Length: 366
Image 1 (cartoon, rainbow, N blue to C red):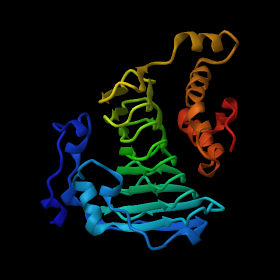
Image 2: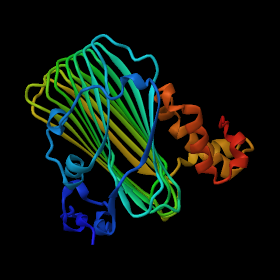
Image 3: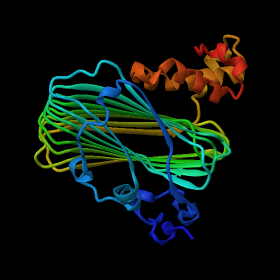
């Protein structure tokens, strides 16, 4: 029996795991393993002496999966020097090929004062691979630093992902953290940003699409712990067949974070009668002089949009797909060039179509 069987997993009774599929996970059936990681781009920024503890970037207590990283993680480190602009993006691709393993890829991004870096992580496996991937990224942005991070999930249909994104943003620094979730069986990301310096800002963006029996699960935190900080979150997703999605987000404005601004938007489309989506935005505000808003919608395609297209001779199935593709457009447009937005448009289009042959009708570019 795997030593992992002795670990106590959370349950759906815990608020952070509400609506999740954690009860289906038999952790004892897995063994610790490794993904194959390749790196391209500005590899000179890798491997420099730097260590970021979880407490450096998060005020939340670690759960059992984060604790596994302390002893089993395979760590990649990216660090910059003061005033450095890393000339090209860094792309890390984690490929999982072995069955029955838990992979724990860990990435630490330590951006020095007034530096800039772009990092993209891809997670890949085949549909035949049964595995569990538990990635963690920890981002520390010093004063006036600029960090762009993108995670792209292209895992196979038998792989689970339980991921963590943690960021600490200092005075006048900016962190942009994006997630594209297309793959996996059950895919969960817990993403938190902590704004600790005056004038710090953060952007969080996600695009997710689930079909078949897939489930995408997002839990976010925008933690304002300094004055005049700014955060903006936009998560958009679609579910069809019997797929599911969950979004739960919290904006937390602490009592010293006056004149802060925080915005949170989650929109989900249900494309089939058997599909299900849940969206739960939350606010926790401890001071009055702030500007905050949250918006949440779950529902089918707007009938008026569908009718408009069909009345102009577009076939019903193509009209629906055009509306969905347009729904995702503003999220894709916010992604950096390093995430290859055109390639993502193609992948989203093919997933929408279920038939690559009609991609040109949606204006999808390869």
